[in-house]
Amino acid sequence: MAGSVDYVANWVFAEDFLPEPDALAHARSRARELGVPALSPATGALLEVIAASLKAASAVEIGTSAGVGIVHLLSAMPPGAIVTSVDMEAEHQHAAREALREAGIPLSQVRLINSRPAEVLPRLADEAYDLVLLGGSKLDYMNRLADAIRLLKPGGVLAVIGALADGRVPDPARRDPVTVTVREVGKELRRRGDLTVAMSAAGDGLLLAVKRPRAPLGHTR
Image (cartoon, rainbow, N blue to C red; front, top):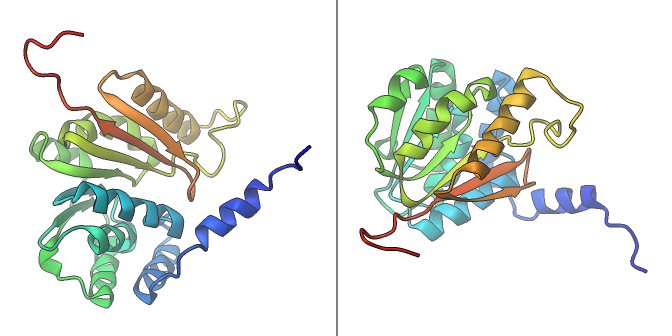
């Protein structure tokens, strides 16, 4: 009989699997100083693989978080790709500019919008983006979800950051507002018939959903 699996060791191995460039390590350090969550190395690497496989030319990030996500994405997206990052905290976006300079990524590839996501997202075009990262305040996740899905092109990917909420989501006894909200996001994504959904345990959980292409007119099963 096989021994028990050490899932913690597996998680640590996955997080340390790839060497981290200095620019990303410094960006994570700034995020800690600002008191905002940042993508873990394994989460960022997974998003790089997704962005590269999509050949994503456009992405939206909700919650700038010192630029860690932007650097990961633009490291994998094709030349000329654009990331639109929305955050109401100017300090977070200043830190993102520092991260981009250190990583050698042109500022022309990023639209940093210093405003409330509730004001910005409804103004962005329908089905215009290959990838949407839902981050920022987890209490606002459900309020942002409909716009996040609307923005995706058919075949585009939604990535919900921190989908395990510091490990609380799997514990049914946890009923604090953040945990309940993040659980509801997962339930809503599973409920919809226009998405293909998966959960990764990378970092603090990465919930992924692909918007299925619409069936041609007249198509029947």
